[in-house]
Amino acid sequence: MEPTTRGTWGSKLGFILAATGSAIGLGNIWRYPYVTGQNGGAAFVLMYLACVLAIGIPVLIAELSMGRHTTLNPVGAFKKLSRSRSWPVVGYLGVATGVFILSFYAVIAGWTIAFIFRTLLHSTTSFSDFLADPYSQLFYFAVFLGLTLFVVLGGVEKGIERWSKILMPMLLVILLGLIAFALTLPGASVGVQFYLNPDFSKITGSTILAALGQAFFSLSLGMGTMITYGSYLSKKDNVVTSAVAVGFSDTLIAVLAGLVIFPALFSAGLEPSQGPGLVFNVLPTIFEQMPAGTFVGVLFFVLLAIAALTSTVSLLEVPVAFLVDQKGWSRAKAVWIISALVFVVGIPSALSLGASAGLTSFEIFGQTGFLNMMNFLFGDVSLPLGGFFFSIFVGWVWTTRKASEELSLGAESSSKFLLAIWGVLLRFVCPVVILVVLGQKLFGF
Ligand code: TRP
Image (cartoon, rainbow, N blue to C red):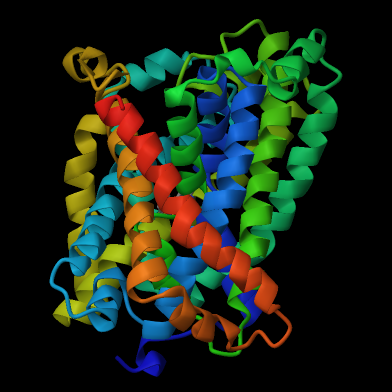
C-alpha cells in the first residue's frame, strides 16, 4: 500500500498525541482504580508499574517498529515479515480482539455521556437503577459507538489527531485539582494508605496477571493497535523516545486517577473491591461535596468521554485498517459493517450489569456476569497472549537486529545501549514472564 493513500500523522507531536490518546482512556480512570481496589491496593500498584516498565514499553516499541516498517495493519504486517502461514493468525486474533474489547468498552464509555447529564441535571435515579434499565444501557452504548464511527469515517489525521491535542493537558489539570480536593476530605488518609503503602502478603498469581493485563490494556498493547498507529508514523520520527513518552504519560494519568479515587472512596465509606461500578459510585460523592461541583463534574465527564473516544477510535481503527488494506474495502463500508457487528456483540455486555438477571449473575472463569467475562477474556488473557507472540515474533523471528535498524531511523540520538536493553527485555523477559503468569493463572502451574 502507498503510505500516501493511507495517510500519515500530520507531525511527530500529532503521533504522540494520538498514541497517547489511544492509551489514555477508561483504562486509566475506570479500569485501573477498580482493578487496584480488587487486588488490594498499593502492592498491586507496584506490580503494575513493574509490568509497564519491563514488559509494556518493550512490547510497545516492538509493535510500533513492526507498524512503521511495514506501513500495514497487524495481519498485513505479519504477512510481509514472514513467509509462515501461522504468524498472520496472531494478527487475526488482534483484529477480533479489537471488536470484542470495543463491544464492552463502548458500553462503559456510554456511561460517561450519561453521567454528563446526570451531573448537570442532578439526577436522582440511582446508579444501579440506571444500570438496570435496558433502554438507557443500549441507548448510550449506541450513541457512543455512533460517535466513534463518525470520527473514524473522517480518517487518521483529521479524525483522530485533532481530538487529542487539547484533551490531555486539560485532563491532567482537572485531575490535579481533584486530587487537591480529595485529599482534604475527612478520612482521606486511609485511602492514601491503601493506595500507597504496600502489603506484599496480598500478591498472588491473580494479582500479577491482573497487573499484566492492566498494563497491556492501558497501553493499548497486544492486539496490534500500536502496529496500526505505527504504520502511519514517518521515518523521521524517533520511535523509542515516542514510546517512552506515551508510556510515561499514560502511567502518570492512571496513578493520578488513583490519588483522586481512593481518598474519596474511603472518605465516603465505600467498598474498594466492588468492581466495574467503582469510579461511577465514587466520583459523584466528590462533586457533591466540592465547591462548583456541578461545573467541575460536568467538565470532568466531558473530558472522560473524549478520552474514551480517542481510545474507541483506536480500537475500531484496527479492524477497519485490516479490511481496507487486506480486503480492499472502502473505509466507509468497513467502518459501518464493523460498527454494526460491534453493536450486536455488545448487547449482552450492555445488559449484564443489572438489566438482565441471567447475564448479570452467571459465573464463569471466576468472573460474574457477561461484561466481566469479556473484560477478563479479552483484557486479561487475549492481550497478554498477543503480547507474548509479538515479543517472540519481533525478538526471534523478524529479529531485534532488523527491528533495531528500523528503530534507528529518525533516532540519531537514541543510543545503542538503550536498544540493547530493549532487545534483552523483549527476547527474554517478556515471553518468559507472560508465559509463566498466563500459564499459572489458566492452567495452575
Ligand atoms: N488503552 C485504552 C484505555 O486505557 C483502551 C484501548 C484502546 C485499548 N485501544 C486498545 C486496549 C487496544 C487494548 C488494546 O482506555
